[in-house]
Image (cartoon, rainbow, N blue to C red; front, side):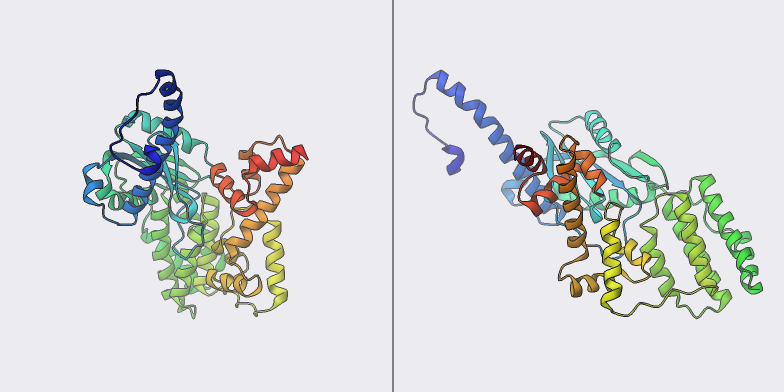
Length: 397
């Protein structure tokens, strides 16, 4: 009753020891749940820049922090995604979703976790997450709520710097970029020569040699991107290309977030260099026609298990993410993300009916949702029941 009414002081009547011993075990989980909910609320407010009240500041907590990212750099373009409320993994250990749904912020209460146990637990959790390109950065000092937003911003920058195609890297403390793999005057001279000679083959060979150097040196994606951007500007100037540089750089911004290995990075560099030199062109946007959208919709329905986004699908059909989003609003009366989620959950239902014994983690992977906890929340939000209950209901029927 004291918990329900929220009183601070409560006068208890005489109770039997046996009765008290029966009540206390039931109170502990409830108290822990209330504490976890309160802590998650405070963490979300702190991340949003909301200041704490004087009472909250008196009970200031300190946390160990780590940021994990899977699947390459975040998109610099608009990306739709569901709001995430966070979760408590263990007592005093919390996970909140970061940018574009491919990032997890882990926070461990310093009163309950040592730095070593926090590192070991988070590293184990991250190891099991999917993705060919992953990075995990730990903050070596504790973080309080007043500095949480700024510290997480620093962690985000460190994670981006740490991303190397095809690798999983773990780092403690700030990350500094190695400029190796940047501007090379010999590469620049070869590119200018290829453009002036109108030699598409030589241009492609030069770019592939450049990308091979990135692979050999294990160049970070951010360094390779900066280098590629400089070379593209050179090619555009040398070719006097009618293609606006802004369009080319927008294409780079959209596509770099899809890069997870050096083969993809190489293909992107070659494609954009050919476009910059004027040897090819970006296809015109298709007409706003129902037939085109039906083709697009069927393709997404067939490839729902792939790592799809507005950027990747737009690139596949040579349209911008914003235009793709408008098409879904017009013809489906819902967003791209809502359509994709619906297809994935429908596929998950079919899998659960066909193979009731399949672990939920495998079901989530098969339908394109790597995180089983996120999958369970999505499944319940669409169907009204958790996937585990759906399995048991259908098995009973």
